[in-house]
Every structure is written in structure tokens, then in C-alpha cells.
Length: 314
Image (tube, rainbow, N blue to C red; front, side, top):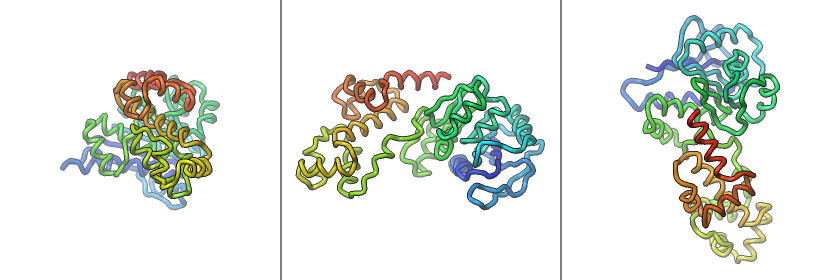
């Protein structure tokens, strides 16, 4: 059995507990559970969460764990140097060490992130960089694996990182089965961006929302104004005016962003050639995809592919 210790630092963020659901779900795949999970704290007993209620924990004591993860907590400062020392001891004996969100500050204080690639939630990146300049921070990653040290951006990125644990321990098929049981739309690789461009596309009009859903599902289609206007049951002129008023952008610009987002995910998650990805996401050719990436991200897709390969090699 793979023993996993999750260190609760008050006030603990609840998403750290949610990420452990991945391991709980993995345990349902086989007759014999693969993981033994313990929630730990400096002295044991009740630990306050950021939501206001408390969770029961075990004292860290003299136990050792195969995998040690420091949970996220509100703020960025751990006030207990005794807890930092305990984490240092546990980390020394663990095969794999990770953190969720602000848990990276404790790993940094221990010295585990010096000279390593790491990340945290985008809100805390500047503070982590100022306090610990020896860390090689990767600013727009869901999670980062550098040797035996893993760091996640926090919130739902913690779920992605623990899924990567399952894939490393039990295989890709097991990780896929866990994602399916957790009703996840897709498994996000660590190189994915923390903030999606699509979050800004939240129309209030049902017609425009239906058009966006249609476009996402049919990126390989031409998606002309006439075609999209038919979906909205409007004339092309009425549709263009209504769409631009709702979205603040033309239909062509939004469709381009949808295609870039889909291509971005494929570049990170697959080994398909850029020509194949361009075709699958509705770009006429690789050069048009390159120009779209330059407009949206300010860098070509080749850069993203190279970064993803470097991270995988690391």
C-alpha cells in the first residue's frame, strides 16, 4: 500500500481535502486499496479550515510516508517553525513530496525548492519569488514535477496533480478510470494554463450561449457568420450585431480564441503533429494556426510544444 500523508496547516483550504478524493476513488478500482491516506497536523486533533469548521487530524509523530503533501492554507506564512521542522523530517524520508497552492511556501522554507522548477497559485507567485529567489518559478502551470518534488497551483489544479500521482503509480488506464468516475470533462496536463481564456466568454443571452456551445463542438466546420446566425435563428446582420454587443468581440475573433484554446490543450496533451492539430481545430493550415497563436498568446505553438517536451523530460 502507498502511504500518503496530507499535512493540514491552519486555516486549511478545503480544496486540499477535495484533491484526496482522487486517491479515494483510485482505491475503489481494485479489491485491495492502493492508497492509505492520513490527515496530519503538528499536534493532532482539530484543525480549523478556512471555511470556519474544523477537521480531525493525527499528530505527525514519528511516522513516515511514501508520499507527503503539504496542504494549502489561507495566507502565505506558516507561524509554526515546529511544523516546518516536522515537514522537513517527513520530506527527507518520503519518496515523493508535493504541495497544493500556498503549501509551496512551506516546502520553500524547508529548502526543498531551491534550484528546482516549481509553481503556486498565480496570486501568490510574486510573493514566493521575492521571498525565495532561488526557486525556478514557472508562472503559468497547473502543476510542476521536478524530480521527486511536485507543486500545484492550488484549487482544482491539485486534483490534476494527484491524478498524475495515480498515473505514475498505477498506470494511465487507472488515471483515466478515476477521471471518468469523478465526472471530469478531461484530464489536464501540468503544462496547462492556470487561467483559461474561455472564462471571459460568459454571455448572458441564451442564443449567444447556444452559438458558443455549437462552435466549441464543431471547430472543424467553417463556422461562418451565416452558419452561426442559423444556429441563433437570426439574420447574419442581426446576429453579428447581437453577438458583438454580448461578447465585445466579433464572431470571427471569438471563434479564433476557441480554436486556439483547443489547439493549446492538444499540443500539451498529445503527440500529434502541429499540422494534424491545426486540421483538427479548424485552422486551414499550420501557418494560420501560428498567426492565431501569436495574436492570442504572443508566441507560436512551436514554443508551447518545446516547453511541454522540456517539462516532460525534466
